Length: 208
Image (cartoon, rainbow, N blue to C red):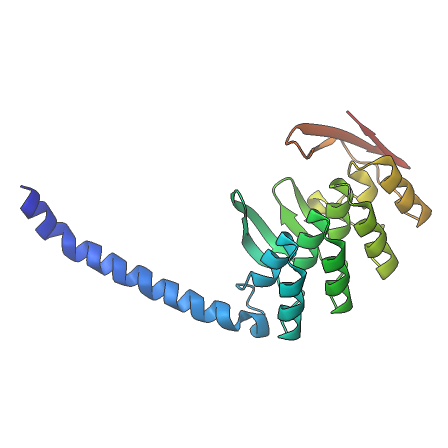
């Protein structure tokens, strides 16, 4: 019985294995050239920005890596987290790697590109730095020209100030002309994963 089963399924298993190997080989070819061709498959610069590996970031930039390349899913130390239109600058801003953010900006990173992550859509690097409490990165982005009033969030119905952030960061944005939009109550997530509701209103937010 077992021999008959093996005899019947072995050709199918071999065919699937060959198909998988071929697909992986093709993906590797595409990834190798994606830094130059902008096919958004090479995640090396994103990974280096997440890890805080400034030497690797500098090397990849010198190799003409696309600092504005976007990826769908990027590797996270605890597994895969789904992201789309996610740039290296967003990765650096989220993790608070100021030196890497500076390098990417110097290399021409777009300050106002927007990506989608687990808890929000259409968010720029500035918002990621804000909600993760990376004050120095927020300052660097603003000084470099990041739009403090960019339309962002779900359906681009919010402003950076509509996202919950520490008071000192909120004050920095207000000093640079940031305003909030009146929107319905929505939700975000704190660093510990707990749900944090914020209600937007003119001039700021109320966080619960």
